[in-house]
Length: 578
Image (cartoon, rainbow, N blue to C red; front, side, top):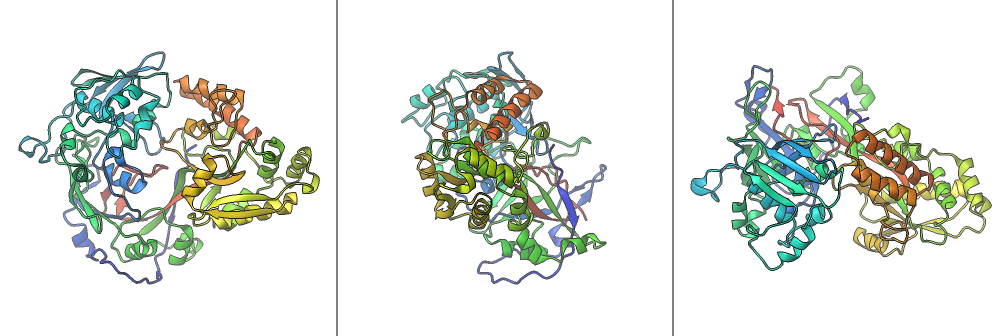
């Protein structure tokens, strides 16, 4: 089940002071910062300025260029797709498309668009007025995904899904205008009807279409030079850009023609402005929150939180100051990969010995200070509302079982077992600490010597792909959330296929994945996936360690801020209290 976030009322206190080299947001009094807030009949409020910060760097907000969560969070306020993911359930639901049908074989999707959706007003349109969205705009954006446009990072979305995608990609080489080129898998029936044809049935396809790379923009946007279109953000979303400075901040204001209203008929969005600052230091960000200059601190390290506030237990006992900590599951599973072609780790008893020798709860509680959950279910993190995690039997810390497995592998008490190197990223903040504890546990339980090797992440990935490493640190931050994505990386297309990074190849596992891909019934699909996941666990395919959690600090002025595992969110229904 999807874990509902934990809300803890906390007491604000002194935060470690920090020097600043850039100008910070002004500390306006709440009456000015939240001016012109009016109460609506539904008890919510209209107006006010929401103040956020992003610490990561990005250079473009154009859908085909998006490659980090900071850019996605901002661009997602301006762009939309045919469907979107519900933040809580992670299921696809209507957006630009109001409904759709899927053929029995799962290969043909027919979408009917909502009426009278307009693009943002912008100078690229006649007289600067945004025109009405139509199915040709969807087709245009989707065809661009299948082109060799500059810096297009999204071809993988359709490459093995849509009919004719690969042929279209080759056909577009050297062409700057693709409006009149036809693609086999995309058909416009009329202004409000679009048909997509797949190569094979794919039960994950709606989740693919919810990916930010499938957000829609008008053909007029591409009339702008590449450098200008990066930040133009002409979409159909609830906000549009008022001002933008990559070195300082951006301000978003409501799209006056936004097509959605709340249940009572009030025009969305509620906010009058969103200000997003670009300060790259978490301590400064936290200090600004304390000073009332920000309404949210996102992805807050728990150790930083503990430095900033009194003990949480004290805060729970009756303290009531206007801020709260929200903790909920993320989409990321942290694990160690095994090279199944390695002379040692091709033995499944060795892999199972390693898995049962690790105390994941101790790592989560004492190494990560409770800022993560032990990977006790298995490979897939507990974020999907209808995935039966409890039916998968994961690993427990069992030293005796671990020793028995190592003996079955031919290394009683570790005698004769060669030295092992855990390869970790030099860029991970806790990588060395976690790896050090894993090495200690393996030594104490199994009697084997374990070394650590720290490598830049790009080099580590290259060595993994070239099959040079035996054991390495990794994580699954899937490109779009779907239980299938956590298992597909272990899939092999044939008995001799060695393309997956681990060299794992199990015929029954592969068959279950292939069957799950074709199942449109969620319950039947999940049953197949849990069977496949259990095979991966029983075979010791890899070594899951913990599930990441997202921690954020929120001002109590903010209401209805989306909750869930996604790293991006829709601010259209967020409102501010007086």
